[in-house]
Image (cartoon, rainbow, N blue to C red; front, side, top):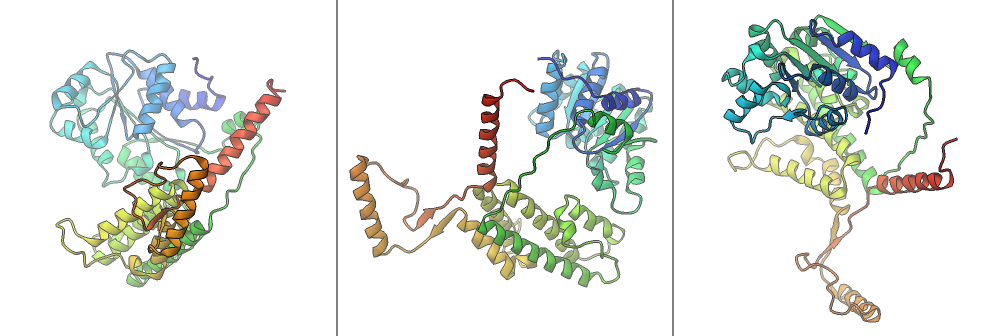
Length: 414
């Protein structure tokens, strides 16, 4: 299978950053093919005599980049992944072989400090998710170790989440300082080259609004109430700081909890436990908003149970007396109750349920399924599974059926 050709603006980006004589930071809008550009660079740098490290890639990104490199012809050996299961000796042998290697920050910093990897032999480092690089991050420490012993190697940093570098005082300057790069390339969608490439064939976009179920609406409203209460407590405890930028509307953005931390970064060493806990609560509530739409009811309920368990006891097993305030609010009770009802309902065993079971037995006899258990033995008698279906599943099914119908009616594009 041949890879798709590059768009003109992607070729322009590659021509601007491919040189190993410079180090660059590339900031792109989301959806412009960041992975493809990274794969093209990795293919360009792939050689047994060089050692190029891919840093900060998630497991799914590692799998996707490895597959795409295989399609592009980089198979021997291709992208190799350093995992926690690999011993120190195995990692040393892997580093000595050279080529393309993906490694996590935690493993790489240990290998650098223990000299399991020769820093001088590193040809270059490609850093993904550059927006996460801060003075306190492991990636910043790795780059300092890299530059102390290797001034010839290149560094290419990428991010397609520009909203993270729009909050705070000179965030782009801070990231470039920690990455120790002087060149930055910014490619928004309104960039002239990008705009020309995308307007050659405009996509026919159909926006489908998926409504939430009644339980999901109750949970969503309750989470918003918890965020409002937490924000009020945070502003009340830090009256000397300007926290007006933190509001409920910004809670819908991924950088919400990062915004809160950056607003308090100048006094973080002086704030008390209560303030730090409130900032952590904002991050938890922001994740709840995200997981409400992305998780199925069972996964969402399991995550809520981990939150309750982590606030009930300490690491030593003792009762936790410093629980998050929002967990004791009425809105939190609505979240827990509605999330549970999306999975199951509990009721006491009574005569009506016995009569209902007799009715089901009659139906089983009619259908010829007598003797076949209608519910598993491990399920308590007072528990009735609900297992609410996420509304996006039905919408996705309808969309796929519509696409299939169009393909059958119009097999050849017009």
